[in-house]
Image (cartoon, rainbow over all chains, first blue to last red; front, side):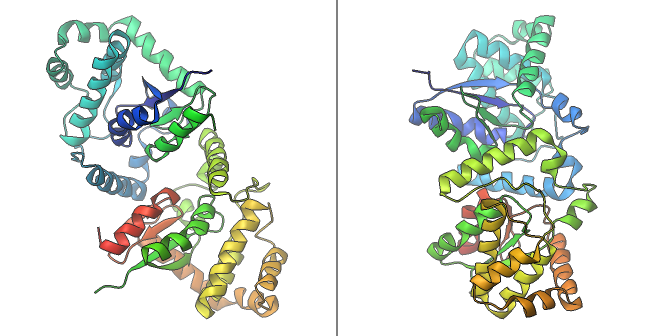
Length: 203
Length: 203
């Protein structure tokens, strides 16, 4: 029997990935589905379709409603929310640190992702600042210096690029996106529940 | 006390308006919220942001996933689904007929909307064809000739344009969109339940 696994693709700059990352753990565990966190970069994918920034900045009415919708959603979920002063933020360093964590020790990797999203969208912290990342690592009892050094290495640069290429190959064009082992793609925080059902029963 | 009303803005060319129009009646009646159907045209709004066709045609990966997602959604809801040969279709005549119906007799207006969406996305019928519209009117025991004539009048042209301008003024940029009496805007079929709660309790 095929193992029940759901790939959770996200970018740390993505707004709706914030509620998704907070919701996925409890929901997946209730559904008895294993979740793999797959950080990647949306930037190159957006650029390939001619967008130089987030569509939420390009299309004003869409962006305005997204922020309001996210605020309502966080209210419903009792998640802290503060609209970030800067959006979108460079997520490359955060994504590389997350990759290191997820490969070394799934628990710190996932906890890092949760904490980073909360800092970004709950506390208006800069996630492109190594200090924010270092603080979170320290809270997780991980020594920041060697991790940040490794995150700046060629190996991690290539590692993250490979993940982003894989996302593109799968047809991913936004985040969060959930992909089942049989290649079914679900886009958006609001598709999480349906994706878990598919991962479990294969349709 | 403010009356509990939810405005349901949609374009007959909009894919996700199909499941929304089928779901909204029973859900609203359960929630004891009155729903007003507000057909409008997305075309001028898309053009104002530089799109000459649907974003689902402009962005290939996004479009591919939308069709698959809609198919899954219709499967879950046990709604007939056939991907239309032509997309998007000119929805102006259908929208004007719907406006006539909704103003004359709410029941035929709403039933016309339900039947037209089903013909378009469940049976691959052309909704820009007066014959399709005429068939549906006949099934609803409405004489098609005077309605189609009125739909082509200056009064209806202006009527629909006014509705579209109102949608734009409200900040609507996609369909379906639900708007509460206090101006809260919810975009997307997947926000219908939340919009009904807001319409009912005001938050």
